[in-house]
Length: 270
Image (cartoon, rainbow, N blue to C red; front, side, top):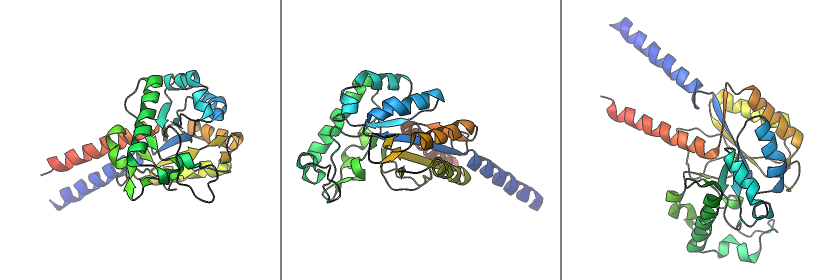
């Protein structure tokens, strides 16, 4: 009996180790590449680079951006090629602060009502559906600002979104993630080696890493070089047996399915 009990423990331990090693869609880790603000370089630099390696990205789009409004057919093509078009609001409202000189009085989040932000976000969903035909969507908080006064405005929008991305720099553990404020790493000036090192840490810890890019080879004050971005993409491609490159919505849906399966197993346990 004792021998059988020890063997059972060994099998359970090996199984758990294997499941951890293949924690993300049978891969060691997951990597989500997100790009904010509908900048021209996303269409000109990023999407061609992703497509050349058959990698996928999530693009958090703002309708007021010239890179969105003037290039609708290009975004429609991106969606047809399996990139995710995600919601980053109509006008990118942020709370006005001394170091945010780009925030105008009209789009100062501190002057918004809950109804206004809700209406604008839902209208953006409608615009995105006109491009890709999809009703299931994810969201990213402009500037990482989550509140109107003391209220988290996502609370009234959870039925509209699978998940929302925040801006806190941390890796994501699928067993303890808040899907309506998912952590990410904001990239600004890092080298290719630094980007790759972050992925290696995600691989070692079997976690998800979400990258947040703005400019890639220019186009924004927050920027990484084309070379650094390319080195990251080629590393992901070279290690696709271990790394699951996916979109933000697919990662969130996977986390939800995994949590549901775990709950069902717990309920069925004697």
